Length: 207
Image (cartoon, rainbow, N blue to C red; front, side, top):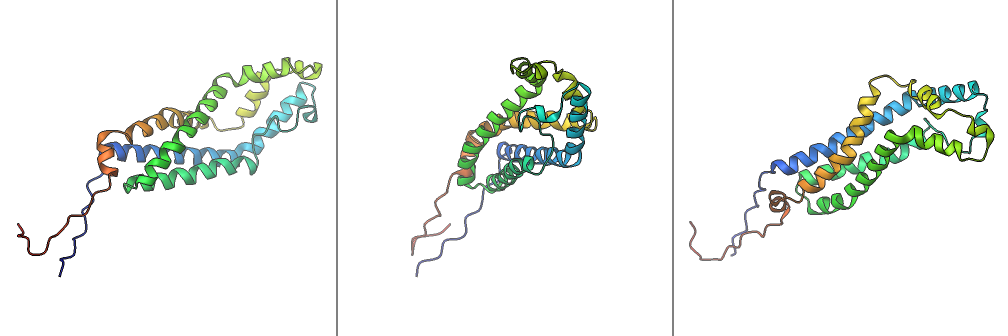
């Protein structure tokens, strides 16, 4: 009778994989914090934006539909989906699941690209909004001061929210890049490699 193969021992998780998993979970946590801030203060930011708009003599209905939105449940659907995917991938990577690593290499670059757009918007949001007003062809919109409008909206959020925003941006960009690299190092390759179970030959001497 062939002796059954003993269960394979899972090799210890290398530090590179652990660090990648931690980065994915930190990004999920940062995005969750951003979503909570949106739920708590998004409506106030929208109200402050519209109040400043009225102070500049322009009615909110003058703006193109959907051009400004600081709150609302629809804004939370995308981040919630991303958070769930990040947590699932982190758990799969922590367990050494090869499919999880492959899906991470597909998904994390998309997060990196989106984070780059968010980073650009954070740096040049005021200039881009003002440019859109100035080139709208509408004299009413051309008279608007984008800086004052955005400042009024952002002042509705607590002062520490900027830390959450920048943490999210850094984790989506530099963090995502690190995750991609860390999961490709030799130690990670060995951890995700599927090991063949040992073969026992009946009658063979054992040590």
